[in-house]
Image (cartoon, rainbow, N blue to C red; front, side):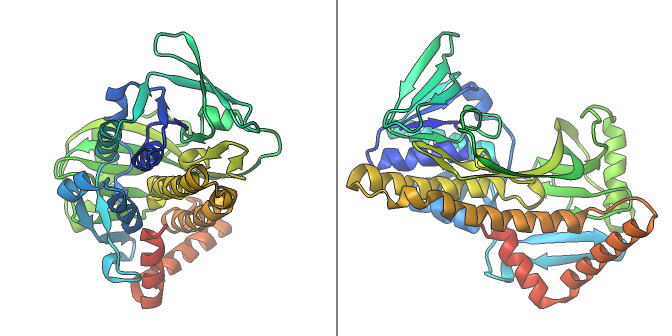
Length: 387
């Protein structure tokens, strides 16, 4: 088994297979230090935690992860909080930075005898309709290489070799939501004990704690502007304005250690299986970060694929592999629907024309329903945490 990509999807898949005695290698184009320090997602759904626990992969997050179950909305009508851990299915998130999870998973995989080839870039996947597909790679020293296996799992993201190697006829569902965020990682303690969603006439702002000393912020941003276009002071001033700091309390400032521009787009590929090649995680579908679904979908898909591969390779039962695409697409589309709903809830057009006023009035009504309707709150909680 060849696994492309040493992110959560690839390493969860590799760990489960290694634990079951199935030989696999993980090929990762980045170096080990970069993989273990990439700051990405940080909110693990309850089902993700259950998957990790079931496969002996949750020791680190149980020691250092923090349960979280509250979000706060700040709008022109004031603020309100939802204890979503007491609503819907009554499930919280666990806050655990993705780089810590990846470090845990890679260490456990190596302990189990797995092999990770860092600095090895997959260039193409060939002969996916055969029983011995090939992965063409560029080795760490620049030389070409070739890996063969019974199956290949493409866990290497939307720009990886797996997507580039897909045969004609793949259906791609794509949507550009027309919204851009400036993603920020600040060396600053959290400014509130909740995930903060601020809706403002100047644009959205978000606050998500990562650790007691690091906070993730998002700021709706001009499409096409580089990440360094604004000074740190201007960013903090804009965050405080949109989060209504004068009304609800100042933000704790610190140095920005990471900036990135995120265009909110979504896409889904169908099907997720092409002969011996399977798409997992961001390679299968890209989802906007508005509802923290990406890493959780990746872990779920990896676990589904691991069970299907085990049944096929150890018992000659291909039914799980045959059903993999349809089963995972059900979860992906459900997550896409909620993410799309969140984008509409948090963003509105800035114009004063009739269409903009109508859209913003609808958004305001949705927020009012979320503030006052228990059934709406239960729906939100179930979909906010669920995958």
